[in-house]
Image (cartoon, rainbow, N blue to C red):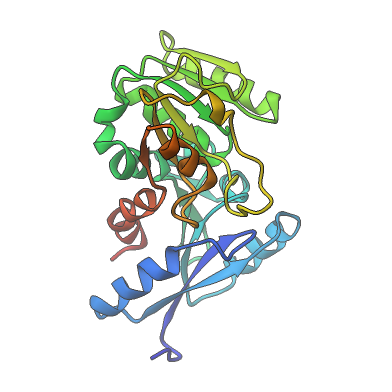
Length: 262
C-alpha cells in the first residue's frame, strides 16, 4: 500500500512503454518489506532540465533509473558522479540525497557483461561491431575494452559522437584498437546493438546489415521489449548465438539497490 511515508522512485525515459524497471524493482521492494514504489515517468529531452530541477525539491524522492535518450543529460546535470558514470559521461541511475543533491552512477557496462556475456568471458578475443555510441553504447564500449575484446568498430548515425567515443576509449586504453565504421558486421564475431532500434518493430529500421550475419557471430541486443527484436530474429535465422536485452537490467538490480541505500 502506498502511504504518505512511501519513498518514491522514478523510471525516466522517452518513450516509456518499453521499460522494465518498475516490473523488476516493485517486487523487490515488496519482498524485502521496503516502503517504496517505482513509477514510470515519460520525460521528453526538451523538458528534461526542468524535470531534473523539480526532482531536487521532491523530499520523498529516493532516486531514479534513467533510460534512453536521457542518460548523457543526466550525467551533465548531476551534482556528483561516481567513477562508473564519470568515465563514460553518462548515467543510468541517480540517487537524491537528503539535501537535494542528485548523485549519479552507471552500471550499464557491468550489467551488459554480467547479463549477456557471461561476466565478460564471451567478450575475450572478440572483434566487435558496436552499433550506437550513446550513453549505453559508451558504457558497453568501455566494458568490452576492459574485458579483453580485441577491437571495436563503432557504427553510429552521429559520426561526431562515434569519433568522441573512439577518442575516449583510446585515452583510457591507448593500445586498444577502436575505429569508426558502418553497420556491416563482416570481419566481426561479436555484434552489439546499443541503440533503441527495435523498440518499435513495425517502424524501426534494422540497426545493421543483417544479410551479412553468419553463424560464427554472437549477436546481442540491449532492447528489452520486445524480447526477440527484429535484429535477434534475423540473427537466429542466420544461425547466430543470440543474447537478449533483459539480462542487462536483471544483472544490475543488486548494484542499483545498494546504490539506493538498501
